[in-house]
Length: 256
Image 1 (spheres, one colour):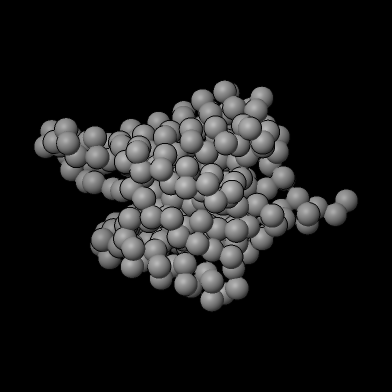
Image 2 (cartoon, helix red, strand yellow; image 1 turned 135 degrees about the horizontal axis):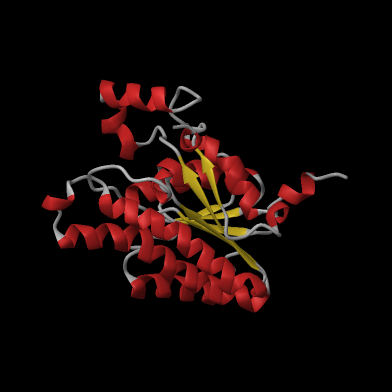
């Protein structure tokens, strides 16, 4: 059997939120390399334009779509604009997220809500809008981005932990409700990755040593190492896979 065609995303369009840099951009590049048309999203126009230019210069078909993932009206307007243009989103990667570190005893409710809204509620709203359109066509792929904290907690990141735990269960809820519509919903749980969001931790010798000592691979992950899993979950190769979270973490979650 020739399985190469199973991973071919030619003729598919993918929307990746929070994709002007970091993990989102790496996954967008992986989907583009597999043949997908890419819609990049971000809040910073300069970074978004730069990312679109870079993918275009590499020979990929890419465009930007700037909207705030926490603004429901803006999300709906973005999808309505795509509808008007005849653009169909076949693959959605809910990647946009933020981090906020503070002990719970000192945590303001406004900061709690900001993290939950960005990391969890946005995935529901954008996922719902995408799935409404996927359902009409009888097919679609939703990929949510979880974390090691979808399973385990760390001190000082309670809202992030709760949001990523919610992503795991949101993915299962999507799979339960949308499977009969031809939509598969899965999640990726990255380990500790070399990203801008983690730069302060990377630069901390104690934390750097902890990550390398705690991870069987003895190193941080690279953003591009998510691309293969993302392409798999976006492709026909995963048509009977739904409601799962795949950890790309160098083995960290498997070791005490």
